[in-house]
Length: 114
Image (cartoon, rainbow, N blue to C red):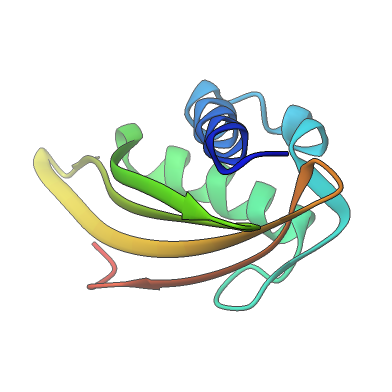
């Protein structure tokens, strides 16, 4: 897979996150996917997405920047929603490692948590 198609894979991942169809995450994440920062695995990610969508009306993630080289793709994103009538945002940078046509690992950092 070329870096451009790696970026397309990660874009598809964000599309799935924003769609609410988290059962489709297996389309883009390896069965043994590991998140080294927060949710640990696919089930942890699904739980986090359910919780965020329940807590923040209109929760959505925007990919502000995306680039890659080799088997790595980096995304700078802004996520946001509304809680108690107030807009809330969080900015993140995540590095993804692609293997076998799927996202195998991720390492992320965010500026704050809503």
